[in-house]
Length: 358
Ligand SMILES: Cc1cc2nc3c(=O)[nH]c(=O)nc-3n(C[C@H](O)[C@H](O)[C@H](O)COP(=O)(O)O)c2cc1C
Image (cartoon, rainbow, N blue to C red; front, side):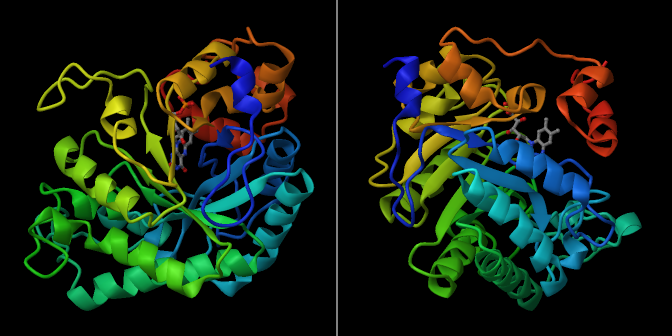
């Protein structure tokens, strides 16, 4: 396949098709109001993305409950008061011709009390002095994800993307290290996956027939087991519970270091699975037109762009104009990002990241 294949449309099981193969990754930017409402800076960022030819744009990780919070100035979707700001976001994206998804997030055991978060661990041993969620509390959180999806639908989004990565609550429940529950949400991998599956099925039931559901998965750290996650993914793909799987790899070329799949690319462990009508994409150092095109050859239906889109908002356009396009090299100066249109809040947040801003 060639770079030009990145510009072929892609149908999804529900709702409108993707106009090309570029998806904008969820990117926390800590520029919302303290109550989770979208700020003028959020709107400005989304407008910039909306005008950049992505097929689908995910919002930053967005809290499904007030207590779900992990970041200062995190975007929220846990209250109807958030809806007007979200409507403005979805409208900008639609006007730019793209599809939109709110990334639904609950920080689980890593919710930050200093920001109003309420740590919600799967096990009693994870956070000193904090008891594991009761079964009723787990069901409440499940229902909060579903209520948030309905709010996203009301706010005009084409869908939601579930944050099932990086040890946040859905990922936490999958982990045998972080989940020692003895109720129906712990024990076997089937039980540990139950929260994710119930959230997906609940959203499917609650929202309209065109509503799109994505699921973001990561497989590293937090005691996660690749073999188990592959099993869960196989089931989700086989039952076509979602529209797209977004594999959150830090490096899309990553090689599995241990276990049954040692020596294979992490990506192939998932792209080798039968996927029926579910679309599969990946994030991780996609910093050039060539690498984006290669990922289609490696079995991806779409590519998920993170840092390359921060450096150059209109990455898809750059690729269209130049099949040899290479992203600027990291790190960059704050002035570079400022000139590119990023807010001071966003730039300050990225100072905490390894090798983005000098
Ligand atoms: C500044 C920044 C913020 C991020 N915020 C989120 C987030 O809110 N949700 C999430 O799932 N991933 C988040 N990520 C991870 C990205 O979505 C992406 O998976 C990762 O950066 C790898 O892609 P890249 O190499 O193209 O940047 C963030 C990454 C960066 C650099």
